[in-house]
Image (cartoon, rainbow, N blue to C red; front, side, top):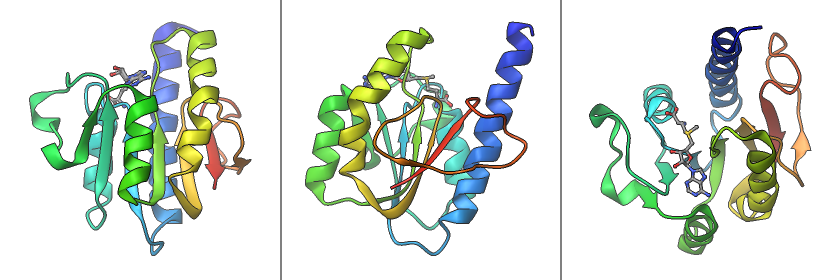
Length: 158
Ligand SMILES: C[S@@+](CC[C@H](N)C(=O)[O-])C[C@H]1O[C@@H](n2cnc3c(N)ncnc32)[C@H](O)[C@@H]1O
């Protein structure tokens, strides 16, 4: 499979997985957390799909498309280890989290996801959903949309 095909499949899984999790968490109390603002594509999708929840966004740098800059009060800039701890200390509870941190080097991205998992767990509302581009540890895996191949995207409940 070409890298273009692979990227298209990953982005399709990301979008469909987010839509699936938005529907699954409807009516549940809590905020949304997008980990990895990047260009702002998933943040833009989430703010379109979820209009009734606060959407927290994290990244070490603000480098998104100008149309996708989050409100200052909702953007937590810094290293994830620090911003996840800070968010937990605010008392925020997350009904829907999207994990999209990473640099594209699989081994490094998996190690980072494993290291951050306990910090994410502290934030989650009971029964909240985590949609992730990397495998996380310590959460219960759930079957996401059936057309998404295993390990293309990951789905968990807290
Ligand atoms: C794949 S991009 C996110 C793409 C974004 N979701 C989008 O749709 O445009 C990953 C982002 O995670 C950030 N990142 C990776 N590791 C991080 C860490 N440990 N702490 C904070 N930000 C991190 C990078 O700066 C980068 O912008």
